[in-house]
Length: 419
Image 1 (tube, rainbow, N blue to C red):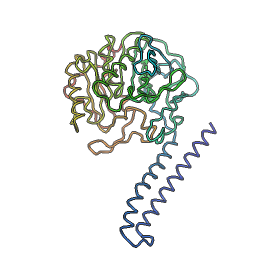
Image 2: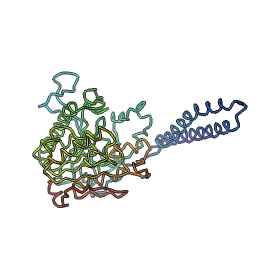
Image 3: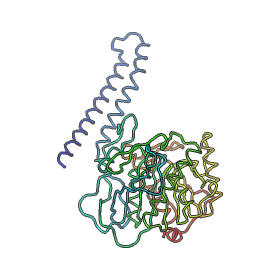
Image 4: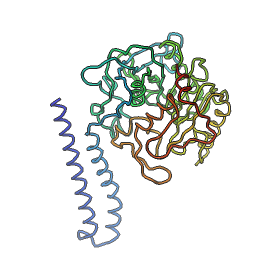
């Protein structure tokens, strides 16, 4: 602990020094621009100023990030009664050949994180990204360049804690394309604290990184296409939906709610469409793919979008892609026969549903399309998702819009749907 504190303090001091140096450089540079420093030709000063300003701004930004990423951060605390336990498992579906595996004939292997209601816990909560999972940093210009240390990000799950007595409703959680289950720890922990067993899947060869059998596995072009078309999207959404159904069957084969973000949201709807045991599905800002678009969902369904997201079927499209997303969403809604909720949360962006804001030091701050500066937290989305299972969704900050065509499901009926 002492060593960690020393390293953290050193990093903080280095960041402070960097910020001071960058600030001093900017001040000196501006003064030099004003005084000219004996540069007599005005155009030389102007050109030099234009050339150096971006460099100094980038240096200042990097210095600020260095300070931010050295600060310890805690994920939003679960709001439920139960302590949360966690287990990391590797499962193989012997009935399926993995079409994405580099070796033909390989069976589909998955990493599954379980969050569950625990009877008790001692000691400290487990690390956010244990072992080889610490390599999860998002690859932007280099792994973890603008992200803080996972060691400074504190969750609220206790590894291997004994499970609480009783039978708990099952939630299967799928991440967005390229992401892993760990990025949705806040949602999972909160649901588990309210008495749900949450199984988070990391889709092999689609996630930027997963850990199976003590080895890291990265994504492939086939498993993680840059911008999947309808054919690619349908093929992958069927694979992910099969993953979700396999995990649900592995955990008892009873009623299940499927939840997913982005492409995982599309897969959750597809899984619910194909699974007679589905008690409900939640799509967190995911454009829809697969046969569910025309076949619909018969169980209760919620689509929760970021600001002006067209995946809800209600938006002002800014381009052809968004217009197509709106058309697809409306097809899904028309074909669905179960109760449906659609919400668009103002002031949010796509990755607000994950913990990335805490990793980057952004703390969830964005500018919404209306121009008002708001602070959106993972806690908002966590409570909104929990509300989908317990009853109508509410937002504690800003405005949550329920579309007029939405049919609502009472609290009691929603709880019965997942049992």
